[in-house]
Image (cartoon, rainbow, N blue to C red; front, side, top):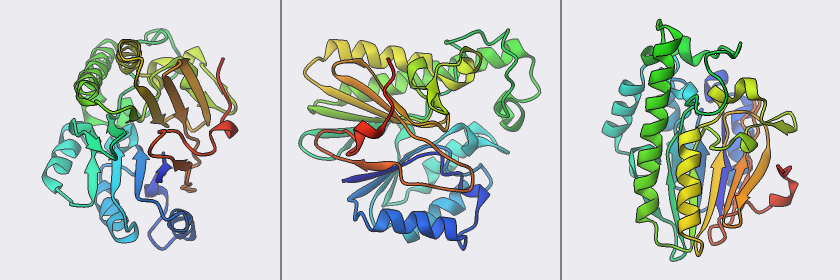
Length: 276
């Protein structure tokens, strides 16, 4: 079994915080073979120190993608470069194109994705998120240039994901991402798809790649795990493609569930609200 958590935002707590120890204990009692984190682990200044702490406290392999908050107070380029140089034997960043064979039947891949403005109307929405103020590549720019950069980030994510998918020959493919790939998977407070939030809360480019690849490979099952919107739910656009979105509260890291490696699905899947 693989333990799954998302949007743990460890920068809101400390290693001595009871909330942290409770979360680590909740994982430990499940005795997972690995742990999957789908982004927003911390922020740029604290990310590496928290990964080092997790290396001490999690006795099994950790697989992760980054979220938008992991670049806050820093740079996308610099954070990625630091991870490329880090090279930890028990921690595996999926965002650089890594493909992990978990079993004879199952492969794990992933990329952060990005709110890439392909869904909704970025230029007219009143929503303004901190990404465009706290990430150096997106700050101090006019809205048109920000959109161009977000479109490029979405395209980059889609290209990496497409390359990974082509390499997957197993019956089951687990896809880790941070930003939901479909409007119907952007859950918050028991509902999904608020159009005003879509430009920043959905990665349209990765959604297109997933749909295309799943249609071309009906014998394979694709199960996507994401977060970002802090709400919980599931969406199944195709018979062989399903998306689980995990909930989160700042300062309260939580175990979302246990993933069965062979089926790729979270064990208590039926508790997740289902999008129509």
